[in-house]
Structure formats: structure tokens, C-alpha cells
Image (cartoon, rainbow, N blue to C red):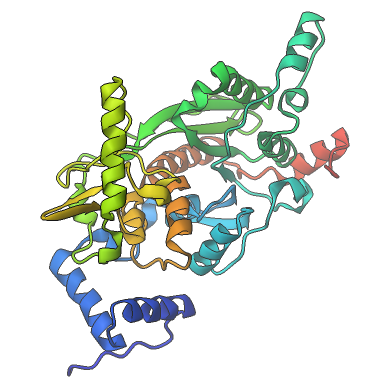
Length: 403
């Protein structure tokens, strides 16, 4: 075979990633590609390779939309399960840049400016929607007067209102939503009550569970997952269950760390002294605030969108020198994003994106349970999932096609 490497028709995004990486490490293109292949052959680490396709028997064709898409964690998982993304919305321009590099398309922008009639029919609506407080004063007044009210009154002025409107008009058979754990306690529990009441008033079976991603990635990351099934499609309550953690041992932090990280990620003496003094002040007051030195043989705290500020929530100890931040690539691995996905934004934006992202492996595990439920429905009912004609006819009847 010789000692030459020939790669034809490499995607432009991959070429750009190779060029950026080789320049950073001051290597020739051949040297860099050989170093990547050497790492793969020696470690066989799964995040260094594109995700494998699941067995054909586990897949079922379905269409989904990706709202509040971020960098596409939902899309990665659902495409792996056989889904086809037919519409995406994400307003942040830096997330759009990453999304375009990873999927070859730019998401639609602000969801508030998107007409539901512009969204194609789909089987699953996926959304990592933002958490906002609702004003319930008007709702409480209507209750006291014995007047009926709908989600439009309760959610008006929030992004969840736009999401609920899309759900009402497009009537997707399945909703697949994700949010932070404290959604249930946000604003004294009022936010969660409005969301739950809204989904049920829209006539959906609602399932929800807080799942810790630490069984899939070396990070303590609790998020609430909400899965809903349209009662007009699923007349009987579907036998959906959330996934159990994988049987294999959970990954360790050291498995995702780079061998030779750039020295620039090591904390300066000034910042390291400041973090230690800050932690000591709070310890003296009996508070638990402060930095966290991660155990390489354990898991980390939750990676947040503020990680770019000082990295204090996850610091990697180093022998004989100050601790360091995770690199953006390590943050990608900590979230379960593969090395084949290029980093095309600044470190600051990359930290924000990964801190706000979903863990694709968890989404895939929940998504697999959804697919099993769809398979059960198709076998039991013998009809298709999409209710295109019904949804359009009902929307026209209600006079809401132009919303």
C-alpha cells in the first residue's frame, strides 16, 4: 500500500477543520492526519469516530423538526435513529454557524417570526425550549371569576407561547422537549404548572423525567425530558417508558482529556490566586461556593454556558503547575459530540454552545424509546402517524391558519 494517504472528495467542512488544526499544531497535513489515525488505532475511543448507524431493525422512518436547535444535539440523535429533519429554527448567529458547518444548512431565525403554516408536516417536534417565568395574575383573576382561559392567556409574551401555538396548529403526533432540572421549581413551581397544564390542554399524554447524563458521559448533568403523545393519534395511553442507564460502566473524565493540551488553557497565577481566595472567603462564611478540581477517574460538575468566564466549575489538576480549563474539544467530548465535528467558532462561543447543549447520547436513548412506541402504535393501529389532512382541516375550521 505504500506510505501515502489519499483522500478524495472530502467535505469542505472537514478540509477546513484539518487545515485549522494542523496550523494550530504546526504540522503538515500528512503529519496531522497520521497523528489522528494513530490516536484512533491506539485508543479506539468512540468519540474519535463518526457515530455508527443503528441496526436496521431498530430504525423506523420518521420526520422531525428541530426548534431552539442550538448546535443540533437533538438532530444528531434523531438522525441516528432514522429520522429526517425537515425544519430547523435557531436565532443565535454563532450557533447557526456551527449548525451550518455540521449539517450543511442554516437554521431559520427567530421563532417568533416564523408562521406555523411555513413549517412542514412532521412526526416529532423536538425542542430544547428556554425557561421563562409566566405572568399568572390574569389567569388567577379569570379563575376567581369562573371564566375559562386557555394557554394563550397563560403563556402570552413568552417563547413557550410560540412553541405551544406551533403545537396547536401543526398537531405533531409526538413532542420531545428538554429543559433544565429546576424547571419544576422555577418561579415557585408556577412555570412548570403552566407548561404541564398547557400540554395537557392541547390534548397530549404527558410523560416527564429528570435524567442524569453521567451514565452516558463523564459529567453530572441533570435535565428534565418531556415526551408527549397526541391523544387524537394515540387514543389509548401509549406504553412509553424512559430509558434505563446503560449496563456498561460509566465513562471516566480522563478518557476524554487531550494528551497535550495547549498551555494557554492553564490558569494564570493571578486567576488561580483569585479563585482560591474567593473559595476561602465563602468557606469561612459556611458557603459552598468556589472552584472545583475534577477527579480524572470520576466525573465533573455540570458544564454551564458561563464556563468561558474562568472555568472554575471544572478545573483539571496538573502536576507541578496551576490547574487548567477544559479545552473546547474536551468540552465537546464531555457532552458526547464526536471529534469529527469541526469547531468553527471562538473558544468563548464554543464554551457557551456546549454549556447550553443537550447530550446527544441521552437524547438518543430517550428517542429510541419513542421509536419503540411509534412501532407499537403502527403495529396496533395499522395507520400512518402523520395527520396531514386532519390537522389542516381542523386548523382551517378554527380559523387559525394565518397565525
